[in-house]
Length: 493
Image (cartoon, rainbow, N blue to C red; front, side, top):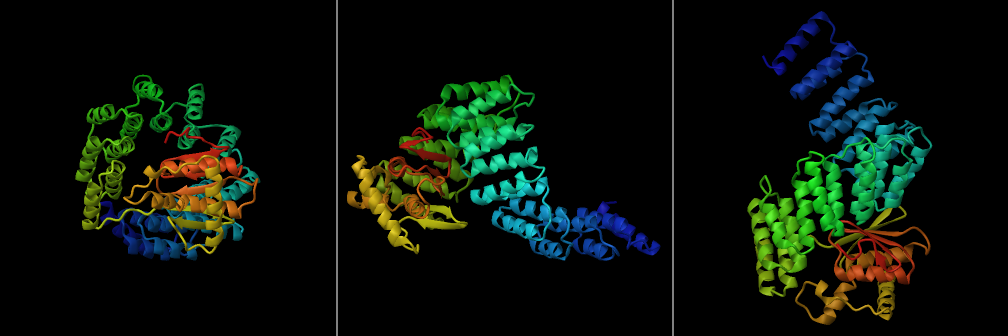
């Protein structure tokens, strides 16, 4: 007999014996019904408990959360006693894990207002939430709170801090936390390696990996994803190939989709497109969308239409509605001035009901996030923003800046292309940042949902030198740290 069928019978016997109001027995019933997915029965068993303790409330709350019923879960949470950290931590963690970073942070604030003391899991979860919404100012405030507790050297909290700072663009702060931990576990090492890789600092990532191998912590699959990403982001072909072989022969780790995709991007980005295609075909499993997309991205950069078309064909066979593939295919045709093919791809997108994701950049100032699209005129400070852009245009031209018109993938006149470049969303965000933040303050941090174009990259380098400010831009692939006319990626991205 199935457990779901037994529980009601057991419940009936318990009621006959008069034990249904016992907290221990009632909680066991709630848990049993929860396992069986019997929502109403679980609630009735819970309501029958005379003196509900925190364990009873938390059986029930966890059940509603896991069942995906966020509305009832929130209602249960509101009914619960609010003087224990467990339900607060549970709800914050679930929201952080469900891409509800803003809501998780708001709940943490409410928790502090209720004078409930956070534990290590609360801090780790709210750091995860800050990382997901890239709220470095708030994350730093929470870190300050951590320093006043006994968790400042805690590995679980420290790992979350490393991850938060790395994903929010503060890789130096991530390293300080890493260095300050009493014990670094595999999560600590992996977070630091991946963090450096994400910031285009492949050399530093590999140094950390070398340090890791001198400890008793063994590399795992995630470690090598970080290591191979560092090699691919830095164009370190010989090192990447050596680590790929070492992973298999020295560490006994079988490559997975992520490892192969890193190698495909490493080869493809360097222009070895035939070798990258050969590697995909030699995979011991069915090639993934990730691998084909990596090669397609490399084909766009190197203007290889034939292999690019092949990649797009494989991707669209797996996912005909894949928007990014249509866009990359269109961009590849545009870069080679095949405007008829561009029009064909765009008609196909229209027929399928697909829309190109608009370029969007955003910047945080005093707790408020400001969003910008290309040629945006909706911001209240638009006059000052466009005035700053004019000034920056003049100053960069004095530094021998020449617009890269090839970065504009549209069939328009050259003068229109130049104007279009200067109203890209990241430049509007930068102008706003320069206006609103005082000289000599912390770096200007900009987030962009697409890959930064070559012209904006060149302009950001020049502006960092002209205004003597550090500029950090995170695009869809990685971070770029612009400082005194140089970028951390070494112009390889």
